[in-house]
Length: 526
Image (cartoon, rainbow, N blue to C red):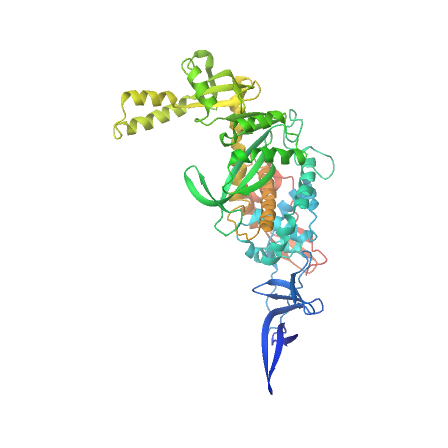
């Protein structure tokens, strides 16, 4: 068995693995295509089936190339020279790169330790600025300022897949979070991502946290993909868990579990991971799906205070409502929150698996919700022959909710505290709709981890930048869309930048950036 080479008319060399079998005087040859020759001496080839790979003839083995391997540019002999792209989109990459550097976030990105820094930063920019599939990343890179900023980036689909496997390793994840938490605490050096937030009453990174999960539909055959029923909707999915800092609304941590793992069974592990990653969790705000007696015991045993909404089928919920609903609607229980009137009453209760832990229940009735539910009941009462007695019993439950707190909280602070849970939904919305979390196109858990790492960083930066431009009249979508239309014209030694229009200037001003007229061309670019 040996390798044969064939040089095509365009100057590109292809290789085949050849074996010869003698049949009498005749010799039969069998060919296996290795593809285009990338590096003959190192035995590196590329074809559609395997992508880029290494082949060792002595052992007849195929293997992946190192993740830091830089594929040389393909030089073809062509009869008509292709015109060089001398005008590229500029403004969105320029502003993003400046913010990542000036805020200090680049320190956390670089802490991942991926050996091709250009690929890592170009890929992060792509996750933020373009919602297309990763297979189009190379086209995006070639038509934008990213080509000049990150000249050694390897943006082919396979090289991105290889990069994600390395970026998603546990070591890379821990290194990122270690530096990221330093930035959140305001450690000096290289910027401070918390400089625009008031953290005067927030002692630690995890002083107050929000925990929730979201289903990510995924129909690819994959060990973590499982059938889940959530709010009556059945789907094949992977569940992604986010932890968000209550004070700032910034993402703190992420995990993932199989789609059929329910929320209540993930809380202990999530809290344990937070602790082992250096997050001092003192107070947690939970969605109703996380509350059980066992989880309450686990949180209290770990000295984590918490507040959680309760599901209506729980024993403690039914007991609190039965004993306190009759005298809830009283003057002293009326509070106002966010333009709504709510009756709210605080009563002591027992929680935990054995109902032996002291806690406080807040029985509430949202009058706006009660009115809406009563209207819906009235609309269907005749069609469903609902009796007056049944209607009365149902109306008593309208707008009613119960919150459980492990420590006493001032009544006027309970509702604002509980409704900060919406900040997790904000982060999920950013990650899914702007940070490329969906759709999944992933074939291995290794690649999934890297993809989730990239979407976490993208969601965090989009949240930070969105907060930065509040009051400017722009959203991040509008800002990047407008800046994308500012172009750079490439000359021999410098690039000339087109004049920014009003909305571009508004964005630059919000970030304290002065857009130059010209910039020197990096030495290693042509």
